[in-house]
Length: 372
Image 1 (cartoon, rainbow, N blue to C red):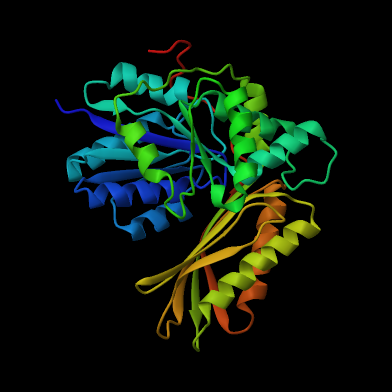
Image 2: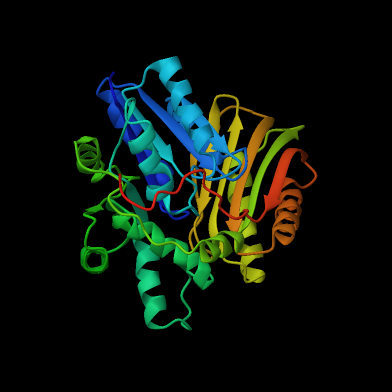
């Protein structure tokens, strides 16, 4: 039986995983291959799913927990894509706050399901600017850097890198060549077993070389990290998690790009005022066939809005995903208040679903203590 390669792209919140998934899928489709995508989140109404569906490849979403805790759901999604489209490649994007995937996902695929699937080398994506800030935090923990999270959150970040088969150093276009070399050297010195692929997934630079590597016959799941599940659970629970789906109706034409820009900038200001660090804030606003996406990583980052909505759309659907170092109730109140302020008197909001919570303790179905 033909074995289908399964590429998992992990990494911390905001590292650019979805952009890399989209770029990889686009390139593979251009080569005439059929590509199935699997997204993952702690709750439904995931912005990443909407973005990838718009890109054209079939997408299944696994929600309600990480791939490790929802392994049977992951397997069901893989099998569904196999039945419906007979893919040449499957690409999965785990939750950005998840680690220990080698022990809990890759090893069971290699052991129990090796007759149908071939696990590709596990890629862990890191944001080049976040990595530089992490290094400064280690040297001066009391400094005024922007990557301000509890040690338990940073523990997850570290463990993600420890279990990588290869490290994808993303967003390299945001720093100078010398600065990128510094970060590369740090990664190669600290994580000696994983090759480093430097790229800008957004610009498409370096994606082809990475894709060639993960699709070649290299070993996968070569490292099982030692993970303290108490520390891991504390790191996940430190972040408030919000997923919301909202219907927007207006009596007149709305400049939707300005609406998105004002909304994400207003939320950034709100979280800054609360000293609540943003891990990742994403929005997707669809009106008819057109859509906008908005993205922000960090309180001092620059919100980015992409896409377009043409014509005179007066109805839209908005998805909001927020991962912030704040109590979930305060997170919900802040987002609801800012939504009302952005809508003003001219737009009616109907919240069709809103979940705000701290992720539960990880409870993987499998956990292997040795590499298969």
